[in-house]
Image (cartoon, rainbow, N blue to C red; front, side, top):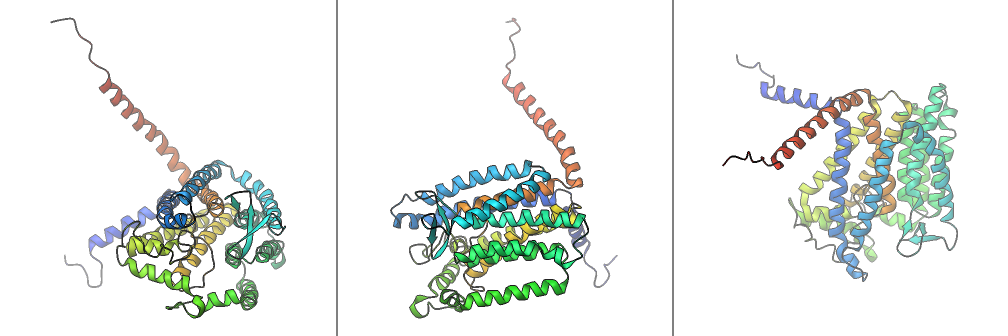
Length: 426
């Protein structure tokens, strides 16, 4: 029979059915989070090594200096990721309060003369001697996610989230405290990410539209006042969509980021063959590593990074939407908002669509202070994905099958190694 008009061919229908079944499998979110984050991390290590060599040589360091530090941070972050995967949910909830208190304490130490260090005009770092620096505000993101999720979960158990005062207090005042400590150092980029996490928690908690719009409008007014009060922030805002460096080269970084993407073309100039990293593009291995990726790997490389972040965001939303545990829902929503919002802000700044906020690309850019809490947050998502009843049952059935396959392979290899004994006959 001929297919009816307007209907899809049978092959397309089958493909759609297979894709839908693949997305609906119990372990889809688990594999997407684990595989996507690992690919982003490995590709980020490669690009950090490629983008930081010239910067290291200009500073009188070994070409692999920044790569070795990032690799060490990745190993430590992997340990934190495994720890987060193995920790029970009750321990995560208990860990939230010490983490919040420690983050606030360290962020207060940043403002103490002799302890706090200013980097690129922002005083948000603590020096431990030598090249080792710590940015406490990065751990403040993780603290707000865990503490806010635990707070909202406890209030939901008591059915208090229907009241505005319980929905906002003490969540919003605690977030305002963290934002105030961050803004004392002048780091508005991290403050934007923290605000996005707050909005993500309120959205997942089911905040009414009027309340959500009111908080968003208040945050917008505060943001406009902070931008207008700083000439540096106003100049960054003026560089959106710029195609020339402008007066006093104020848009130099934004314009050369576009130049790097334009030089890459479809498939890039080749790994290590970037021209912009030879002193033309500031911060090639941190805030603008996406531009170097576009120059060396082309449009294909940048789209691959975007697809990986999209898969990670989809998996996080799926985990938050399928769980029945309120803490898991809020924590997964907060982590997903954190990673996706930071990725959008970083990539949007490189593309000239958003002002340069000075935030790194999660799991990709150079920086141990940003990598460690992010990998712990990814470990949270993996733990939550494994904790789904359907995923837990699927893993329980696959583990014995895996051990059986390994046993079969071991038997075959042992048989091949054993030589036949002589029978004594000639």
